[in-house]
Length: 114
Length: 112
Image (cartoon, rainbow over all chains, first blue to last red; front, side):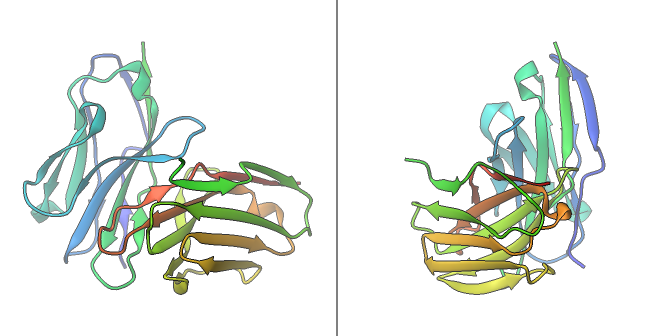
């Protein structure tokens, strides 16, 4: 079955620390990959996306992610986090096929301490 | 000029009632979705419509009935509300070819 897993459920960092959030998916075919962020009490916003081409993609607010096809992974990174990065982060995968279904991981709650 | 808008933002209602949540998108997208986010923040797709046609219908109780009067609207009607229906419901839209989804602000439904 198609699935998306995020291994870190809750991450606590101090400001200026580096961040890496893991995301793995189960399917071996064509995928489109996304990271969304949900700030407290708000809706989901797209951070970055990968469809094809350079596997290292840059998003908004200094975030980047690397697609490693052999590992079925799409990890999110940021060299130096800020208190305002405190939010829930969701990895999402659109698997190949006609249904256009976007499947989300369980989310990672990032808390950045000032 | 909100891209995907849902109403209401908050909804508190008693068990057994029937309620509707409305969603509209002004992005010209051909596909719209309903997602449910539970208390643990897990997001699960419920329905998807493409050009007013239902294309995804996950395992959702038939008390939930989506209705798409046109490409820009996808409403969610819920009959006989239960405590377990309490959640945040997100509407989203995308262009099938572009595959990136845009989300509404969410509707926090509380059933008491």
